[in-house]
Image (cartoon, rainbow over all chains, first blue to last red; front, side, top):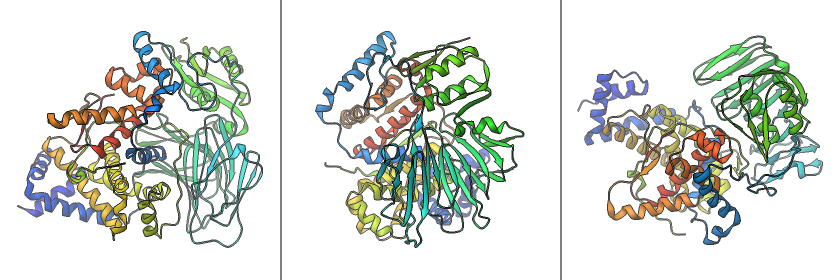
Length: 391
Length: 224
C-alpha cells in the first residue's frame, strides 16, 4: 500500500480540500483493515504537533458545564423509588397527559423554593432585578453575595482581599503571591446584576444571566478572562499586558478602554461595542480592529462592523435604564426575560414593531408592560410567563 | 454501585446530524477550581478518590485542547463534543486506575486518537462525511441483537426516567410524541431557547448514562 499516497490524502482531508475522487479514494483506504496502523500513526503525528498549540476552537462555558455534569451524573444510579412520590414529579407526569390531550399550559419548573405551582400565581407586580450574584472561589466554595454581609471575603487559598460592599466586589492583592493561580467565577442569575473591580483595577459590570471567570490576580504577560452573557468593561491601562476577554468563538483584545460585550448563548449574535480606546476582536480565522462608536457583530461565522452605533443605548443597562433604539420585539423581550426572570412566548406572529425610548430598569414588570403597550406592543402576563400578542 | 465498563474503545456513538445547542444560562454547581496546572499527579490522585472538583480542574485544563484537535481532525463540532464527552467519561469511570497511569497526557490523547479513528472509519464504511449529514428521526436506534435488545431498552428507559422533570418532558414530547420545538415551547410555556437547552442536556445525559452501561455502540439520529 502506498503510504505516501495515504499521507497526501490525509493532509488534503485535514485541509478540507479533497476532490470528490480523492475523497472516495480516501474512504476506500480507510475501509481497509491494513491501513489502520498507518492512519493511526498519522493521527498520532498530527496530535503531537497540535498538543502544545493554544486551542483554536473552544467550547462555550455552558456547553462544557453541561458535558461535565453529564459525566459526573453518569455513574450514579437512577433516582430512588421514593422520588416517584414527590409531588412535583406527579405534577409533571400529570402535565404530560394534559399537554397531549388538551395542549394546556403547564407548570413552570425552575427550581426556586417559592411559587412552583401549576396554576397561576397572582403576582401582579414582578419586581425588577437587583444586585445578586454567586461567587465561586478557587477551592469550589460558593458565596451567595446578596446574602453576605459587607466586608472582606478573603479566599483562604490566595493572598487576595475580596471586599464586598453592597453591589460591588473589589479584588486587592495583599502583597506576596503564592505559586498557584486561583480562578474565581462570578455568576448572576436571571434578575441579577453585579459590579466587579479586578485586581488590576479593571471595572466590570455584569448584566443578568451572565458569568465571568477570572484569576484573582493577574500575573504573566497577559490578562485574560472569560465571559458569557453581557458585560461592560472599563479596562485599566497596562500597555505591557494586553487584556483579553474570551466569549466562545470570539476573543476581544484591548489595551485600555471602555467597551460592552453582548454574548448570550442562544440565537443571539455576539456583539462587541467600543466606547473609548481601541480593541481587536478576533475569532479563529479573522479579526477586526474597532474604533470608538463601532460595533462588531459575530454571526454566521463572520464579523460585520457597524459604524456610529448608538453606544448610549448599548450600555444603558449598566446605568439602570432600558434604552431602546429602534429595537425589534424579540430583542426587547429577551432583555425583559433576563431582567425579570420570566418566560416569553408568542401567541402567533411576532409583531413587526420597532420601539425607541428610555425607561428605568427599576420598574415592576407590569409597569414596563404598560409602557410598552403605549408604544403598540400588547402582552398578557400570567404567572411568570409573558405572552406577546400579534399586532 | 457496580459499574461495568464495556469495551469502550471499540464502540462508537455515531451521530448523524446533530446541531449544537447553545445552552441558556442556569445556576449549577460547575466548579472552576483551577490550581496552577503543575501538579497533575496530585490532581489525578484526588480524582481517583472521587474528588469531583479535581476532575473539574482536569476537564477544564484539557477540554478546549481536546475539542480543538477533534474539530481539526473531524471537521464536526457535534462529533467533537461527543468524543470529548466519551474521553472524559472514560477517565471518570475508570478513575480508580488513574494512579497506575504514568503519562496521563499520552493516555488521554491515545484515547482521542482511537475515537477519532473509529469515527473516521465508520464514516468511510457508511460512505458519509462527518461534517454534513442528512437529518433523521430522534430515536436511539439499537442494533438488532435480540438478546441484548431488551436489556438495552431497559437501560435507555432508565436513562430517560432519571432526567429532571422538565428535560424528561421535553425529551418525551419531541422524541416519543414527535412534537416540533415550537409546539413544545407553546405547550410547556417556555421559550424555544429553553426547549433547545433542555433537549441538548437531556441527550448528553442519556448518552453518558447509556454509554457506561451498554456494550454496543448506539446510533443516534437526530431531527430538529
